[in-house]
Length: 223
Image 1 (tube, rainbow, N blue to C red):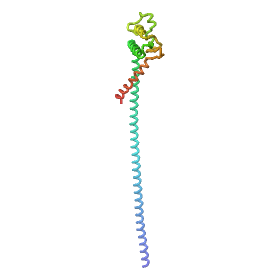
Image 2: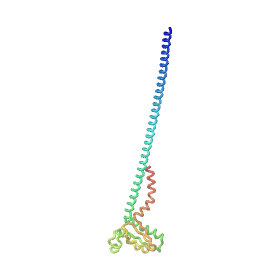
Image 3: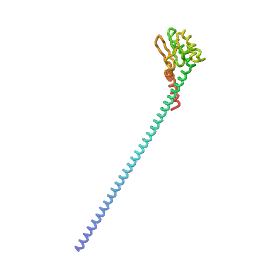
Image 4: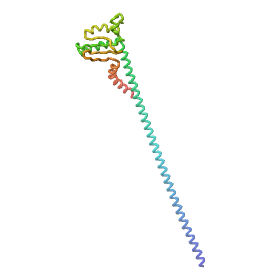
């Protein structure tokens, strides 16, 4: 009887330990499983955060690249417009210089210029000042024409100089040949003052007035 009770008690102890072990094992397994699930959730959350960060960075870089590209295109456009305006302005200036050069080689035009200058200068300085108008030697050849007036062409600057010289001389104006190749020199003899009417001087005066208007036209035409 005692032996039977002992065996029964041992079995109960074994069964109880087994149940406790199984329960503890299940509890530990659930704990490990929960930890694994939590770790997996953390990994997934971190992966999502990292993916969102990478996507955000990529979007930011794409926007920055697009902005830089747009700014570069805008700057290139502005530079192109500025270069075009500068080129057109240079062409305009060269064209004005060419027109002035052509005009200063035109004898009819020079005749009008001489009369206009002589009249205005004489009006400003009065009759007491001696005035010299020097014309290019290779244009008129005054000394040669005085010696051989028959060589003077009708309507030429040489004929004008010869015909006007005597009348202007009575008014204190002398027309003679100067050292310059082109243009006209005006001298106030008593004051030792000389005015050079050449392509450069006339061009600078004209462009001073014309360029602002030309640039205004460009601003209205090319934005």
